[in-house]
Length: 514
Ligand code: XMP
Image 1 (cartoon, helix red, strand yellow):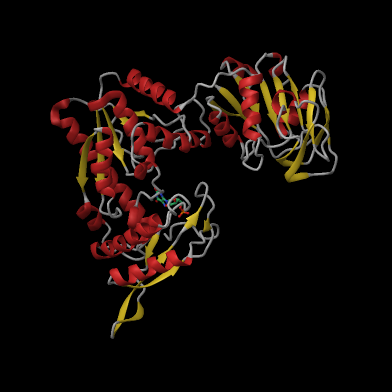
Image 2 (cartoon, rainbow, N blue to C red):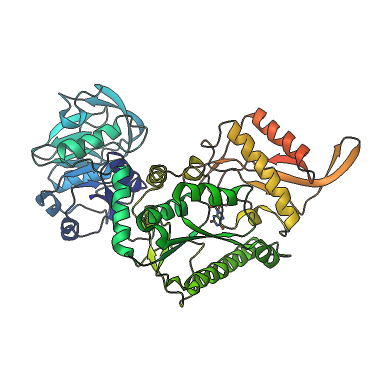
């Protein structure tokens, strides 16, 4: 792999993604990984990420000069560029001028391998205080800015290069090309990481691991579990059984999407468990959000466990493996590279009892979300599944403010279906991150319809834009779309006589209301 050494910038995962966009497999490793360990992994190249520190700060992470004697190609970015400069005997100065944001880069000479034939001036994204004032010996300086004479350098013979700017962000329009040139042209890495190679390699790895034994997978209706299941199905066919628990808290059409579209695309063995009464019964009279979540989690595990036991008892032999849709960012964030110890388990099936002994199969463990989507498309899954917006495990239960009842679920389901239909028709599905519709079941509002006074409930539209759900902004939906949603919901859903819009960002609000 290409190893991206993480100096504590929020950019390390983004760099790893960009490396993969250049069709080269990459992983993120912490900056304190010893050089001997890094070299032992036989990396095709190393990228040193940016970081928040100054190389002069107390305790600032340094690069061990040993790294450059190993012969592995290295590319330094921002802080990584400066740390590399110090380690190789160049000069980094605390100049007092900071460059932040969009900056004009001037290419010097022929631009070297990295900047050759790019526009002589082009914008790049900068974020640094210290600057490199003298490149280490043997390096050709190929670009600079008004404040930073050394903004890019390379030593093609030693396969070492670096840039002061952030090539990984979209604000550096030629950044991806520069990264690609480092990988392909300076480091000489072959572009092999394509969607079809991901599918082939993963399918082979699953076959090797599972052999002729059996596996089970809980489908949630979401992208990750669907793609994980489709990969395992491709690998072991009928040795996989998928379980879909319909807890009655789903949106309109979701069960059909799994039972019809997913099965049609994959041919998977599917067991659907209709547990609506069980879940709605268990939630009776419960208005507290965390209490709802606890109950739903508990009932989910019970149901899944019962189904797994039934499958085993059906007499077709033991089930040895549980398939989970863990993604690479979860692996990185729980501090685990290759170790299996620190798995952040899927909230839906985490906490299974010890006497159900499964080994985990996690076919998406090395993948970023965009790769998961491409793999899904490659496996023939429909776009409705592959580009599905996030939907919380506890479903509509946490979008009914107040206790959950079958009637309230029906009301919310109808309002939600209208909102989704209109947003889809307006072509806004991919633009918004998600748009919860929330039923204020314990609030009543007076209205007038025809000749009569109504006394119904408000719903709240919560359209949000986000990159990762950690922060979000409310989406400025066009008024005509809002108007259609509002008119249709108040006309077609008799219990709802008012539609309101949530215009709170996150923070301080969360995306969901509960
Ligand atoms: P919040 O409301 O915390 O939501 O801003 C962030 C993202 O997480 C989803 N969400 C959940 N997903 N179980 C889930 O599987 C939950 O209990 C849960 N609560 C929130 C939410 O839809 C949003 O995408």
